[in-house]
Image (cartoon, rainbow over all chains, first blue to last red; front, side):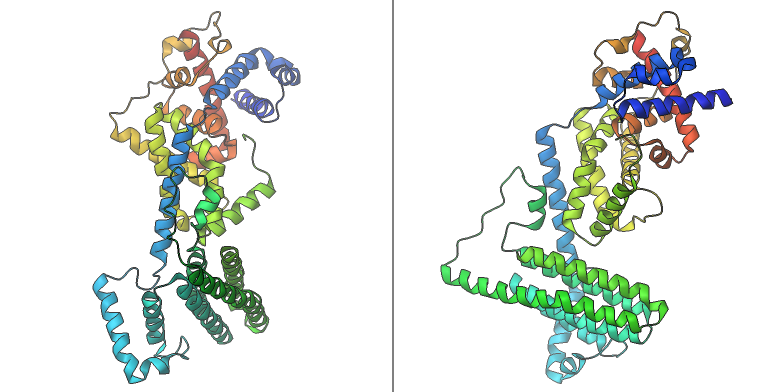
Length: 276
Length: 186
């Protein structure tokens, strides 16, 4: 039994040397002269099996599979664009919009703007933000709104960290992440699309963007430049503010704040890449 | 690569996975590119049909995309997790198909030990290999597919199959012996 186990180990070691380190069968056999007779035919078989199994997928299949994967990625991204309403049935979204529109006149919405997560009006604030996102038609508008919302989330994280509420810090960090994802994908929108940059070339060209007159282009360019400046500022300020909160907060909350810092750093980096 | 990945590579993979879990599309794309060929080869060897292997491979990556948020880094490398998905996908596929019952190791082949004509000395192609693997047990086929087509190190094969490394080495040994015998009579 032990002998058999020993041989299994020898065979495995020889396979590694042969197939990974590029040694020859003879070199392996020299290391194990006693087992050479038994090893040799097995190593020959292994080399042949390795060669035969080194097949490559067809180029057309690779392109098709890559395209499908890219489509699935984008579909998931679109799903995540509505993080709060996405899971609700359509009628609930409509009801939420109507409620926010009605409340807008009553002053409740205005009062909720500065509410923090431990305030009863906080859910009104979140619902209002989601309605604003849904009702913002342009990608650049959505991106700007997300910058504003991310700023609010960071303030809320710091507030809840001061209160030692780890769970809320984690929940709000997730919201911050969602805003930054939408920010990056909206910033990419005028171009072909982020995934294609890394998965290109794709088999079918994406539909080309409609031509716009030069004035529209100039306005959008200015708008993107302005957005980029704000994002650049937040990319520095937000992690720094969170870092300051980390130093003052109780030990129990620190891992959650570190995660928030990582999310903000990665999110802004991605957004800036998209804005390049 | 058959050998275990170095610490740096593992760290790199871990960071890619974390980024992918945070919806970083570039990270997803890198993981996809790094594993696509290996998964395809593994599936092709298990299924033995190019067209169907393509469909199954695509499905593996779509499933991985859907469930990446559930992946937890508990000492199990991402590639082992991905191969686990591929394994399940292959099992599902074979179950749905009027499965080609994998023949247990044929005793007549085992005893055919005199003056083995080395079929492996002639050029072995994938069809011959697939055909020869039908003489293996399910577990032997799985080890050969993961190890040679998927290029997984022994430790990862053990994780994918839920067995000890010693058991995998023993299976690897018996699988190569069986393959050699199968190839010699084909």
